[in-house]
Amino acid sequence: MKRSSPSRESLRKPQRILFSNGAWWLVDPEHERSLRLDAKFYQCGWKVGCLCRDLGIGKRSFSRLVEDSLGITSKRWLREIRIVAAGHLLREGTKIGAVSLALSFKHVPDFTCEFKKTLRRFAIILHQSGAFSLHRLLISQLDSKKDRSH
Image (cartoon, rainbow, N blue to C red; front, side, top):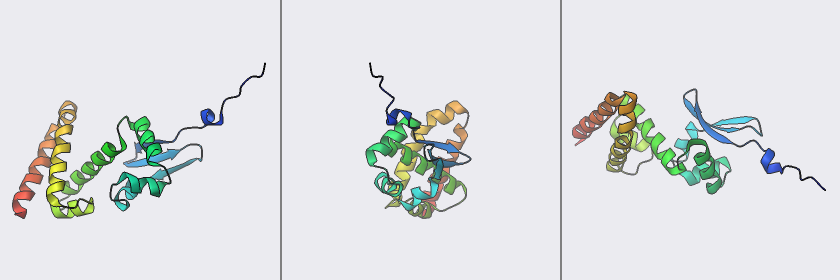
């Protein structure tokens, strides 16, 4: 009786996405390489399709990779890290219009709405981790900057 050998696919080490040393990485053990993704987010305007083309990965493969690595959809992942980047820029004193432009939002109101909506989703996590004051600080900075810009 002929014994079946494991398929090449099953021997392949899977790619994964991870956060390490303050940056997002695409790790490819099979080719013994890691690719830093942070700059690519900005280059691609935080769009999944552009990021996939730049990485040479199909959208569906990329979606599976993100879901397998992080447990969330690729669109949600990019949306959430985009808002985290916005929080860092706001904390550094960058004006809302500049943050909106840097993160490829077409209009400032779109950015403020997305920022608040995402932070509200984070509120429970922040509260549970003891970092709820950070959430309040970011929302208050956003509200005060919005009031000054009108």
